[in-house]
Amino acid sequence: MKVEMSDILIVGGGPAALNCAYHLAKKGKEALVLEKHSYPVEKLCAGGLTLKDFKEGVPEEIVERSFASHTIHTPLGKTALKANFPIVFTIDRKKLSRWLFERALKAGARVETAKVVKIKDNAVITEDGRRYDYHCLVGADGSRSLVRRHLKIPSRQIIIAWQTSVPSSLSKMEWFFDARLFGCGYGWIFPHEESTAVGFGFEGLYPINVHRAREGFLHWLKKTHGLTINTPFRAHPINADYRGHCFDHTYLIGDAGGFASGLTGEGIFFALASGRGVADMILSDNDETIKNLLSIKRRHDRSAIRTAGLLSLLPHPVSTIFIECLRKCMSVRYLFETIVRRYG
Image 1 (cartoon, rainbow, N blue to C red):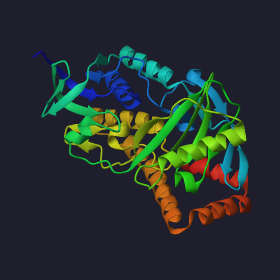
Image 2 (cartoon, helix red, strand yellow; image 1 turned 180 degrees about the vertical axis):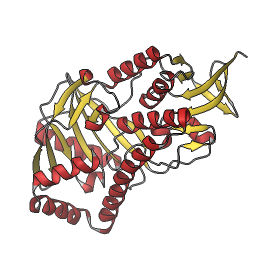
Image 3 (cartoon, helix red, strand yellow; image 1 turned 90 degrees about the horizontal axis):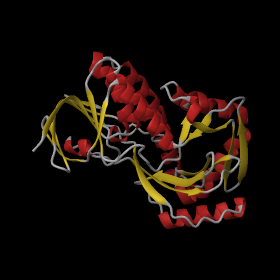
Image 4 (tube, rainbow, N blue to C red; image 1 turned 90 degrees about the vertical axis):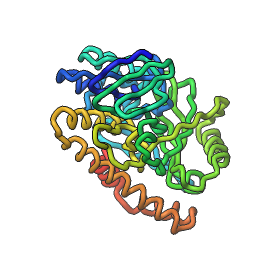
């Protein structure tokens, strides 16, 4: 068996892993990333960014579309929410993957294609029989994380996203809320440069009939947009179940750590920030980045719990009417600015 040694071994090669490796490498730390797929890695993702993503270094050059206006649909009508500047952006996830990959390599990080199948104390074994010894292990291997399972940490707060792609770029970014179909989840239309991501998601433990949600969403798309979708929807789990990130010399970041937003399912920002935060901890025991990130995540998760609680207490039609009345009674501008300020 071939044995290699790395000071810091990162399992998984998504945004969290590459951002962590970049920040470690630029400070002179040896960091090795093991990713089972070749780059650029393709992942099911709506490709949505908010303003806070750019604070993590994402270049504006890879942005495909930007939106200051959003259309919110409920069974009782629709509302256009407008800001004075773009607040949500779409990118090609493969372009982001390529950019993060090249940046990490330039900083001095190593990236190898290898699928980790077993984890031992201070070593991992890959599918092709290689063994990698390490001093520090970082789990960045997604919602089905092998590193998380090795630590015996359960994942119960799972968001299930179902998505397909339309081969044309629609004009508006739109959101569709219907408690009868999605519970406390939602449907989305995210236009890109040459295509549009169309999907819906809901909390995995919520008793949702997936077939009914899909058929209801497709019926709405055809009725309101004239869209007939023949491409299959693909499912992807998003882990929002944070239970810690530091376990002696093992760390969890991104989806592996349950850092995704429990409110929106947003994952890119939380992946990037958790990767940088754990790099800071390894380099200097500085946990300020992680503390700030967890403060944002807790706000998201508390709001998700309140929303789920409201929906469980009220019949779905009543809760929809309540939300609609709230929308009509409040200043739309005030509501929109409050959401942006609080949740980014």
